[in-house]
Length: 113
Image: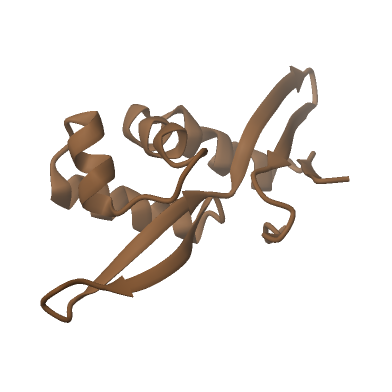
């Protein structure tokens, strides 16, 4: 199955907190269907470019965003395209458990657990 489930509070809560952040949420939503550069994500979501880069780094560290490809522009500079590793998420909170279930965005990408 193309899914990943976390039921450990110590793992689930930091991921949930990152996804609940408005900027992180917009970046994830912006990169589900197509890989985009930080500049594209920034422009589409009216975000400062520096804030976009900082959030992209955090989302990569959390395993929620990945580099899909790197290209060279006309001036020979690297252009990095990012893509969400998560297509959808379900969250369930019970008395003693936090449960996160992610559907992976692409079967070729595996989230670290």
